[in-house]
Image 1 (cartoon, rainbow, N blue to C red):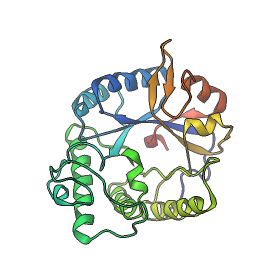
Image 2: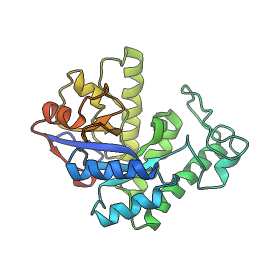
Image 3: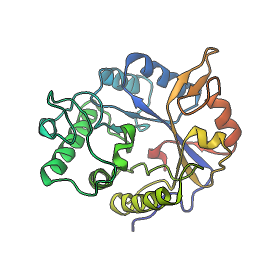
Amino acid sequence: MKHSLAVTRAQRVIVNADDFGLDLDYNQLTLRAFQRGVISSATLMANMPAFEDACRLSHEHALLGRIGLHFNLTYGTPLSQGIRSQALFCNAQGQFDLNLPRSVLRLPPAAAEAVWQELAAQWQRCVDQGLRPSHIDSHQHVHNLWPVAAIVARFAARHGVPVRLARNVGGNIGPLKRLFKSALNRRIGWLAGRWVNTVCTPKDLLDGFIPAGVVEVVAHPTQLADGDFGDDYLPPEQSLEQLLNRALPSHQRIAYSEL
C-alpha cells in the first residue's frame, strides 16, 4: 500500500545539499559538509562539468546511498537529443532555457516524452558511474511544475525511489499556494508511493518552525569566513550547523536510503 514514510517514524531529519556536481569548489564544500555531519544527503546534477568529480568523491568517501539525482531542466546542456528541439525547455542553441509557465497543467505529448527521456538520461549517467540515486528532487524546483511532477513521480515509482515534495511549511505560503502545494504533494505521493511529509528550508527553522516526525531540510551550503557553514537561505554569517543543532537537537540525521 502506498503510504508516507513519516507517519510512524519520528525524530529524524534529512539535511540535503542540492547542486552537487555544479563545480569543483562546490563539490569540496559539499564533501566537507558531509564530513562535518552538517548534511546527511546530497543531490547530484548529472549534466554539470563537475559531475564526474562528484561521483569520484562519492566512491572515495563512502557516500553511496546518500546521493540522489538533482533533475535539471533549467541550466546547461541536456544529455538527451529530443528535448533540445522543444522550445518549452531549450533555446535555439539546444541549451536549457525553461519557458514553461508555472500555471501550465499539461504538456504536449512530444514535450512530455522528451522530459521523460532527459530524466532517464540523467538517471542513467549516474548509474553508469556506479552511483544509483537514492531519491529524486530538481534544480530550481522544476519538478514542482504540475505536469513535470507527474513525470518525475512515475519515473521514481518505476525505480523504487522517493521524490522530494514541495516545501509545505513556512510563513510565506498563502492560502492559494498552500492549496496548490497540498494538491501537488498528494499527487506526487500517490504516483511515487514513497515520500517524506515535511519539507522546509533552513530559513523556516530560523523563523521558529519546529518540525515533527521525519523532515527534509533543503540546504544550499556556503562557506563562512571562519570555516563554518552558512546557507543561501540564511542571513550572512548565520551558521547552518548551529541552527540545525539548536532547532533539531534530538533529530538523527539520515539519508533517504535509511528511511
